[in-house]
Length: 213
Image 1: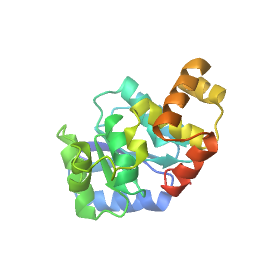
Image 2 (image 1 turned 60 degrees about the horizontal axis):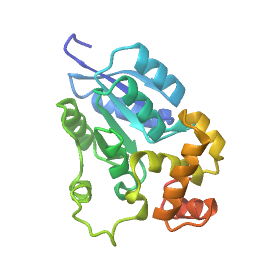
Image 3 (image 1 turned 120 degrees about the horizontal axis):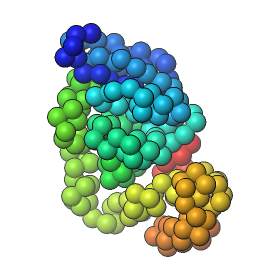
């Protein structure tokens, strides 16, 4: 690694995938994966304690959601470029993650050239989005064509995912440092926007749309 190299931290729970990304970036003389982790806890610790130029973050980690981790990172490091990687289709998560502060959203089946290009875009302080996501961001798709969860605010989407996974209001409140009353208010808004009558409706919707596994 030379002094001018970009320091990249790679967070993904699949060691084989991390190895593949490192091999791709090894072809670029100025891009170096200097750190990696397979859990949200280790990622947060490393990101807070060391200097990094960009974080490549999987949306699903075994001990936490990439969405929650992104919010925590943004609280402490608002300017750190964060490129989200996911196996979920763009229309399911991209818009909400970009609104939550992600610098870009890239599918895991992207080509090596696309990965390198996305990294260089976010390192320039710009947002990396595909033409499809750009169209969604500017409202190119009519409301009837867009999934219901895109109506949710950043915080509502975060709580929606937790409710859909079966978490209780009190547990969500504790994990997000909110009062149970505040979470209950968010839940009511979510139910109304999603035309749901109970948490199981949210779970069904999330599974059907590939938002949870």
